[in-house]
Image (cartoon, rainbow, N blue to C red; front, side, top):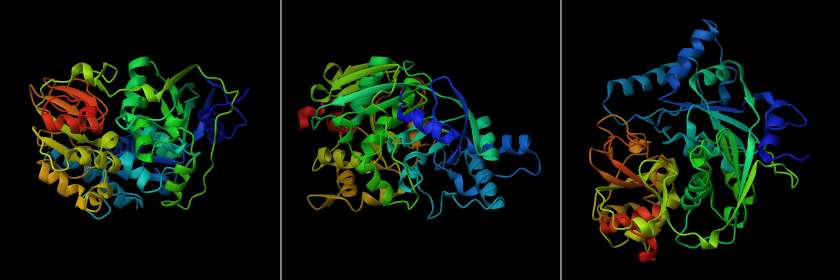
Length: 431
């Protein structure tokens, strides 16, 4: 019997010829990533469990990105970064990207890609549920808790059960008003937030392989919203070109066998898709933008690992060019590289940054910012009674701040169109 791409990577990581769903294996980890929220407790557990002589299994494979609660005066948040900084200094961690320095990179999931840590065929674990973003590179990547991360930190291994796989095939071409966000929202609407629990979500089809790396990362990023262990797309020439520009590491292109067994298969005609939103208060509370358009908004938020990449801002800028926003609109680059490119990329000779500024947007520093709520002084944080449309990945009560706020999730195109009117607006009205 054939294997899926996820099963093949499990077999490779475990040193086995083959595996089947339900098998328990020791996986060798190629990269462990952590950040300022989960890094300190992970370090604390590691020191406690491994003792005074605790050693990091491979310092080159540990990557630390402060990115969540960093541009704040909150003493608890600041203390977390201080702990990471002291740890990196004490153990001479080469891949520590400290905030406040030229090495700072922004949101961990995008930084992993930009800094060349996403290598096809490898195994990556991170102390963040959206670590599944890296699956866009034809690799296995998933989030773990602090205790599991501490064990990896000391041994380089983790005991895992091989997941079943669900296959989502998107045929045809994507209409110009449809993005990867619309695709994953459709999936969530179909299988719900627990339909992928401890399963691999595999994406393929002409529409998927026509996507840029930015868009593919949006798709795999939100696999966790279905409860999935990982999201994954087979690596192709698009992935190879991206990786070769950023890394000299060897990689392996792994593909699912034609006779691979899937728990279920879903097939879509991408040509028929329309813009979607996730209504409060769950990513699977799906409706068409057309059905909810006209809902008055207090704020628009364009950013996060899901919607703060360069291609997201290019598409947004086309809407905002020579226009003004009607409600406070926040532009939050997912990485410092993206932030720099806002001053380089142009439309009709005008930089993206200039377009956003003239439109009346607030451009913030690169970080997770209000996607995870954050301390009270986090810019863009949701306040009581607000109605927000956002490119982020979750809209549970309190996710972006106040539990008394309503958050709609949508594509960058839909959020940009809505910013121009001050109410939820179908992007097709502006295209």
